[in-house]
Length: 77
Image (cartoon, rainbow, N blue to C red; front, side):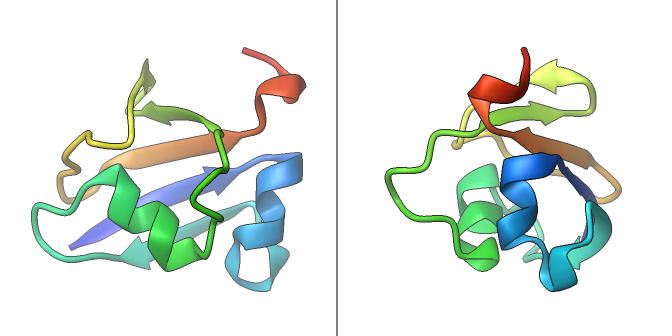
């Protein structure tokens, strides 16, 4: 399934090609944690995570077409 990912400033380090807005293919029923691993975030990274406009935790299950927003907590929130 595909999800849209939007990475802001500090999180762009982990975005493919440094793009802030991209689509990512993940396994059906995947969780935010798996998306973060796929992007290569260190295990101790603590980004602010929102899914479809709502704050989310790493164990949040994603659905096809979901929008995931990531940014470092020092950037806002």
